[in-house]
Image (cartoon, rainbow, N blue to C red; front, side, top):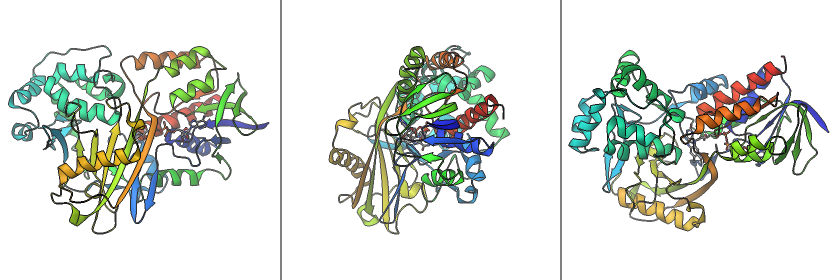
Length: 458
Ligand SMILES: Cc1cc2nc3c(=O)[nH]c(=O)nc-3n(C[C@H](O)[C@H](O)[C@H](O)COP(=O)(O)OP(=O)(O)OC[C@H]3O[C@@H](n4cnc5c(N)ncnc54)[C@H](O)[C@@H]3O)c2cc1C
């Protein structure tokens, strides 16, 4: 049986970041991934001069862990901002309405642009502004929908919170947990009494970063995966290796489906929580049950290309989100990739991306590729006036890849941490647990690697 200091199971962003940090501390490890390549949902395909981000495409500037890692990897000079204008739209009654630029997560940071915006009705705008005078409320775990209705009114919940905040998680606005996913907003209410006032103050103290809120890499976000993997020792990353069970206590045995088991003094599990549950079940039934309770949803991205001449009503900006009430539109969101990022398509070509599925469309994986392409094309054709079908189409399916940090998540997470104390040297990370999105996964992967290093006494 092969023996190592640390086995990292799962080579998505969290596992790779953990491996990178272990290596920096001189700790020997192997990283095992079931897929043919590391990176998990971070995947870029290059086809006929197009750069197709199949999964994530944006790194949030306000959560610096991913950008810091890019800079450490020498990718700093390659980080590109979104192109101007950075307008995002919300679909309402089949019309695209710009989200006022003076907003963070849809929350106003200046009054002027909202007065003239037609995203909300006059009564809806007035109710939004009532946040400035309403007393503090909440105080316990509550859903994103409940928080928004309380502070900003039902219309803001329907046309801002649902498509934007729940939309990025492909989740249910009335289930996703506000303190688990958007603690900054909860803290803003607690500290200033009004979220808008708190955000305006912050904005004055630290103006919005130049270049907007997001960055990407010209070769797609898989550049980050390649750069990370290139820093790791040869042979340390082992793909096409599926872990099936863990036995312990330390030294732990990681059983694999098609290779001899690995003995490791410490294990970092960086798989989706439902896989983590399966792996730890032989060790700890209660821990497995808690991990299994974390819900996941499935999504799909559809990338379509057209010659520029096919677009009769071109749009400038990054894209749009679709509130769940807009039932005629099957997409959750769409990006105008070529007007969002530079260099994603050959000259004269337009690249578009649709995001489908999530809790509002749980049967997305049952639809054929042709159906998903047709639905996405029809949506874009209606909005942009496309006069022909796509010249290139790709569908990427993400089965149970989007964790849902619903109300109750933080209590469950605390229970998971308590169970883990029974298993010294065992750590879990990844989007299912302490934070969703690349920055949080990078930060948590590195934190868990440092905890491992400490536990090993290095
Ligand atoms: C379509 C989509 C778009 C997104 N857009 C953005 C965005 O623009 N910006 C952003 O910040 N975030 C975005 N996210 C979220 C972000 O990509 C994820 O939160 C993050 O990448 C998850 O990383 P992870 O390491 O936790 O998990 P994963 O990427 O899921 O990696 C888990 C790894 O575990 C491996 N594995 C599974 N089972 C086993 C097993 N039994 N044995 C060994 N290995 C196993 C898998 O092969 C995989 O490599 C998006 C997510 C999706 C799905």
